[in-house]
Length: 529
Ligand SMILES: Cc1ncc(COP(=O)(O)O)c(C=O)c1O
Image (cartoon, rainbow, N blue to C red; front, side, top):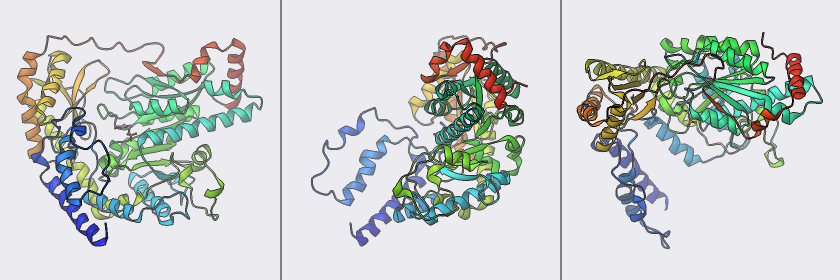
């Protein structure tokens, strides 16, 4: 493809994208194909001779579009928003045009320095303390591929910090025993990604119950920490969620922070979706109420901040702990001395894309006011949907409406009816929602405002489609009485535990080893009181 052909083809692509987005309402959000559809449409071998551009472009409609779930349809209400904006698309094109890999400063100075700058811009919008900024503190921000990556690198840092403390207190420390004693905590409403990250870092994770509004409280954490201490284990790491995936509930950061401070645990805040809303002054208190105790904070700009996938943002209070624990070195990575951070030691991959460019373009071309307006618009649309649910007596809200998330169900009809409603809605393909399960065992339909182009009218269209299936779902569903509410545990606070193989041996520990660990904990300062 020469320059002229490239220019013409690029024009075709831009026209295609504009046309696709402009006519998005003409496509049902869910595709009609069945698994394996694509194999019937393309040859089994790669072409021996080059295909023509016209044929390749035509196959977007023939091969690709039939198998697309349209995330940007205003009738797509599943999962979380997935950002998609013209400024981010332009930046992605440029980033791929320049095509560099940010291994270190020398390999891509602009890539590193712009990343530092835009992370600082956003940190200021969130009002993160100065400590989280490279220029003014010990910390800084970095772009990751995902929220999971943010948890993984921080739990590794917390693990290494704890082991270093234990080693310093006891040079004879049996590291294998000590590793098996480490324990992390989150809530049962936390995203399963937290479990995977902890398991990958080989740190045992306890998922603790929440209150009736799905918010994780300090007392529950305190009790679990005390149990672990009494058993000779070492509590090291806590993940609080601001905006859970299921109902967008907010954990009580003020209460959890106090427990983390008392027990010197690393407090990571996962605000993957709702973190973007913290750029609006009216939501900042959700973080500010406990920010002084937060060790690391992350959210995905690619969810609700109009920056195309992927663009996870992670800030840490002490970057040296993160960098030391996740350090990778090789002779060919050595470069001229610089005081700037080496982001390859702050995140998982060695090779890093120029993702800061799209965040920079979005911040500049929307401006803070434009982004705030966008977020407030989604919240408003969710309120509109909430009102429609409230007005129809066949439905009820299943959880407090939060940000752009509305969880609702068929009133008094049991889980089977709500499941049947979701099945019917999905089968019709005009609206897409997914289900969630509340701590009470109740099933709910989860309606999320996702698309950037959603209007009042779109919300009304989605609601009409949902309510159209209500009567059939109510009569079609087998009479399934609700499961009784889950009994809140009284003594041992735990509803699910994620253990790794390595931790399996812990039950075999001898009494003397346990005693030795207890003594060591006392010496290091991991005290219950
Ligand atoms: C609260 C929360 N945490 C973590 C995740 C996982 O995010 P990622 O896919 O970026 O790892 C999600 C995904 O939706 C989420 O909502």
